Structure formats: C-alpha cells, structure tokens
Image (tube, rainbow, N blue to C red; front, side, top):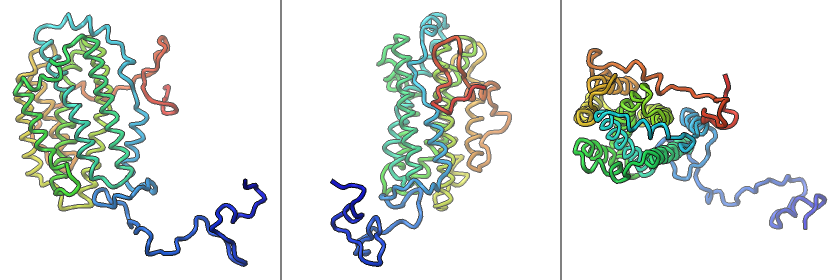
Length: 361
C-alpha cells in the first residue's frame, strides 16, 4: 500500500525520475505518430466523430439553450385534471370537435418530434454542446408525450381514437405524410448537406414554428373562456418548450449556413416550401376548426399566416403574406409567455423551474 511518504514514481512502476529531470504527468506518448490527430476546430456538422470537448464552447447559443431546458423541467402529473373532466361535458358539438381533433393532432405530432430529433437532426451534429441541446429537446418531447397521455387517461378518452385519428382523417394524414417526405433529407450522415438544411428549415420553422405553435390556439381559446383550463395549462408549458426549440432551430440553421454557405436556401425556395405547407394547414384547419365563441377558421388562418411570415423574417427572408392576410391573435404572446409563480395556499410550486433558477418576484 502506498503512503504519502512514498516516492512519486511509485504511483506507476513504469515511470522513473532521472536526476535533473522533472516527472511529467500524464506521460507523453513515446510515439507521437501514434497519437490521434486532433481537430483544429469544432464544426457544427462534418467534424470528427471523436470530438468530445464541450469547452471551449464555440456555440454559446446551444449551450444557453441546454441550460434553459434544464431549468424548465416540469411534470404533467403535477397538474390535476378534475376541472377539465367536468368542463368536457359543457362543450358544444363544435367545441368538442375542435378540441378533440386538435388535441389528437398535437399528440401524434409530438411523437414525430421525438423520432425526427433522435434519428435525423442529432445524427449529423459533431459539436458536443449542440448535441447536448438536441438531446435535452428529445427529453422534453418525452415529457410532452407524457402530458398528452396524462390528459387522455384523466379525461377517459379512447386511446385508439386519439392516436389513430390521423389514419382516418385525410386532412391530418396529408400533413404527416408531407412531414415524413420533407424530413428524409435529415437522415444519414453521408446525405446531401443541402437536403439536411432544407430538412432543418421544414422541421424547425414549419413543423414546429407554424403548424405546432398554431395548433395550440384553439385550445388556448377555450382556456381563456374558463373551459379545459388544465389542458390549456399543460399546453402552455409545452408551448414554452417549443418556443425555445424554434429559437434553437433558427440559430442552428443560421450557423449551418455560415459554415456551409452552399446550403443556404434561396428566398424563392423558402417561400415555395412555406406555401406548400400552408396549403396543407388550410385544408386541415377547414376540417378541424368549427365556429366557437371568440375563435373561428378566419382567425386561425390569419394567425398561422402571421407565424409563417415571422419564421421567414427570422431567417432574413421577406414575408409571404401581406399585413391584411396575416395578423397575430392579440392574446398569443400572453399565452406562450406566461410565468407561473408559487401559490402559497397550495403545497406545490407551479413555476416548474429547478433549484436556484427559481425567482420569487
């Protein structure tokens, strides 16, 4: 057994300290040619698959996104659904159709999120801090799926009716089939990098940034009327997460374009992709959105067109729709920018941020 009085070379019998020489630790390889060549600089994609050093952090936006996702941890089972079970009985036929169809579409879409992140977006990333942020997104998507399942069980919905509705409704199925076709370019490490960039544009800017973010609105409208309050509350947490994902996606796309300028979409291409997606959204909305107090198809389409313009502007493109065609719902920012604080008359913290990230204002 070694003691503190033993010579330092006893730590490793293969080392010795010669007179006048300082012991190096760890030892320098005798054959430098046998050492692995180090990447001179991190790359977003196309770098060494062996790159594992988080620091020095090159992509600060990705590291910040990772830290934010860790602070925003929440569990859907903390939210009781008793009120919604009672409210469900009060919905009109139009409200029930809109709620059920919207909810079923969101449930299936979130399952696709997880698959795309795991099998496509993450696969080509070679910068560790960016990979960590994407893995954190994967985990958040599992929480979202858990949330939908919690709602399904609490409201006594038929699981097959929810999860398989897209197979029965052509307008929903068309969106998912289009999604699968547009994200094929994300898959495979040796695929065309331009296709990867197009896939990122569709996935983050259209699927998440327009379709998904717009999909929350019918249920938020019910929540604002004190109907389906707890479902709306869970969707607020999901929308907060997804808003962060869209911001991350924008930064990821811009970084990819800076490092690989040949992958940048032209404005005409971006407009064409957005226009195709919006045609599918309009057909879907016509089936899904039935007239409700304070919400209808016209309001929904104006808001989703606003989201489409916003996503294009985020990447430096001109808007697709005029100001008369696109307008945000006046309560949209309030819904997704909510901040829940501790209710001192309850026993739980509703902020859903961990540790020192909590702030009581």
